[in-house]
Length: 90
Image 1 (cartoon, rainbow, N blue to C red):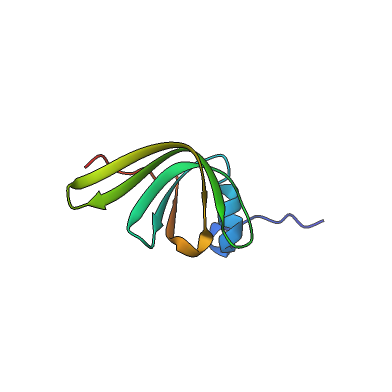
Image 2: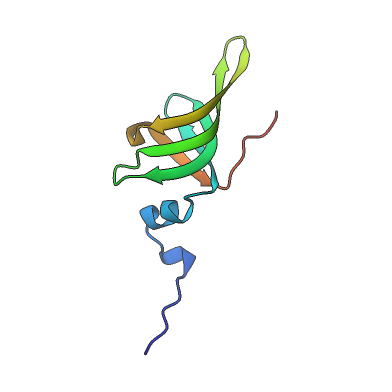
């Protein structure tokens, strides 16, 4: 019987996202919003359900921070995912 080890560089993108379920994730959206939350689940279109969410938005008055209990993100609007990422305080 052959033992199969998983090399992180051979993971498919959805496999990597699947490994992030239950962990904090930093998401950069197309509309320049950034979202940090705990990933609860996702589908094949990378629509995501997050809890304990903080949304960061740049406005002319400065950065606006919004806290949310839960959010459902449309995968079409996601630009980048950073597993384990947190938004810096600056």
